[in-house]
Image (cartoon, rainbow, N blue to C red; front, top):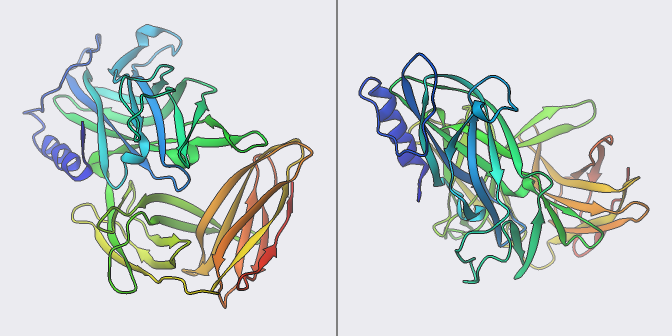
Length: 388
């Protein structure tokens, strides 16, 4: 069942305030043991959006919580939820949540959960009305690609407390963009390596806003991110703390476990860039941010491209950044697979700017490479190569 993050947070707050009245649970198995009372743990699922795919389907069989003791013993794990359902993660953005399940647990402190990725899809259909061909897959440009799952058990380390006669609401924030990893020389083979944050619904902070065009009309489907930068020896490390995509009304909602500050950035190749910084998140009404993107006119975009070589092969991530907010902001990033002994090509469109861009490339186990002062000229490709 889908619902909105605000309704969940409001319900969690009511349960928190009515400590000794309690809120009902819906089953799903109850734990045994423990000398104290019990509380309720409820789980829901949400997602940070991906710019690369039409859909990202993941099948979740069950989620368990560790009760303590030897992790290898099945008796020390309690099932919280058994949805056995195939989810399109890209439908769960802008505060939309999918209920996974809930159960009663002995009151106390917990440190970890584990999520089981399914190998068989449910009997539902995908966005084209077709039965699921795989349990885990992406749809890109109308084509289905299976997601290979190196491990079907995902360990989630997160401290949380279940209070006696209280309801604890946790959200599994599944980052589809970071979880889908391209592999192979064709770039059309994929691994699923789940990247999941565990959020506490009662302690969430919000930033919400609207993205408009130059005439004040709402823009749908625009990527919006909350970023921070940290000074390194010779460059600013940009960390995307949360991301979303505007809905049909141009609205977006970003979720956090800390109040900030954050740099809010909207960028789309067709329109360009706008940002606001710093912005502090709020726990109730949310902070409203308005961003405006102007249509590109002919001749105001160029390209950055080149070759990427990785010794021994592997993935390379290239980040395109602009000077802003006292450091750098990221417009977009791409991850490309590189075969051993073969260079991979990339080419990305960027707006012509009087300011320089910074192009930052990284590959696991390699030193990060930074190319500052990259210029973009109208209709021209600026060559930037990387060798790891």
